[in-house]
Length: 145
Image 1: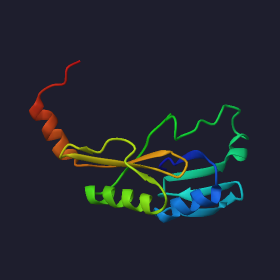
Image 2 (image 1 turned 120 degrees about the vertical axis):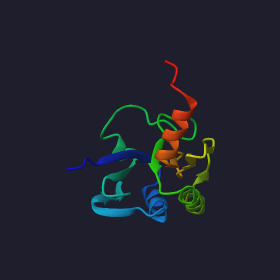
Image 3 (image 1 turned 180 degrees about the horizontal axis):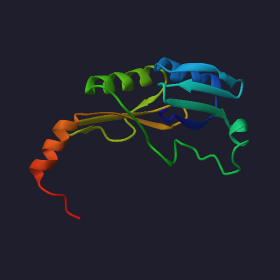
Image 4 (image 1 turned 90 degrees about the vertical axis):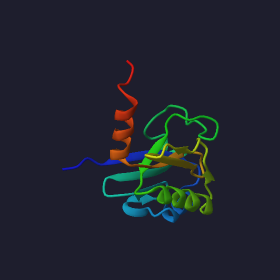
């Protein structure tokens, strides 16, 4: 059985955040949703739990940081092509997100962009040609270490 990941994110407006993630292609799982929580399905193995700040506090007493002012993590989804990365960022902007809060990356064998959701959580979207990366690494010689 493959493992699933449930990424839990504190959000200021569950309805707004639900609409944002639906606009990006996620589907809402009603079994894991109510007025304080939206269980969003990104893929068979990736789920995002959007939790109101009130609901979030049921899980931890730690301070909820302002994701616009600080970053504790960067979430990354691998996509099938550079064009799919560009499309994802465009969709995020159209849904109310912000494009490229982190630098764009284009190394030939790897391409990456990013967006922020309405609460400032950063999602990277990336594509990689593993065979081309391995070839480039082999041609550059052994890594120092």
